[in-house]
Length: 215
Image: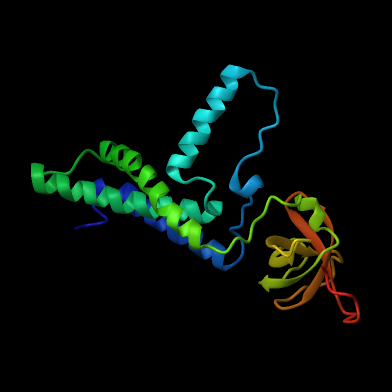
């Protein structure tokens, strides 16, 4: 099996992209949050036909496991399975027909086969994962909550990953920069979220240990 053969290049590229996503996760740059436990919010007035269309879309998302896992984890899983299925299909084609499938045909076939497989694999993974995401509170409600820098060093223009608990005690992973542009927040620092701009929160270090812990 030659992963770098022309007919396997889409699958090699998928593996490289999966590795890149893993690196982004490790350095804290790969967090994307979707509302409602990974589902998209759709705010619109819809008639019966549109509701039916949305039902079909929801069914397709369920089939491929979209929304059951954090988006970056789901994407990495989908890429890995696409690569594995694709290489397997090409090896079968060589074994049975003496030649691999056309690269585009092989990639299309692997995509169609791997998506439902992704859904099947995502279900048991989601069942055993700790539930760190919640729809119980709006993201804005995290402002005023205390947390801790989990990964990296936050400074002006460079966010670090922090873990913050909402009022229900559920942990959220958020990206944080210091409220004071001259300050730095290092891994392990206890922080207080004071404002939010887009997907980035701004925080100050909690230095007064006599402050009551967040409920």
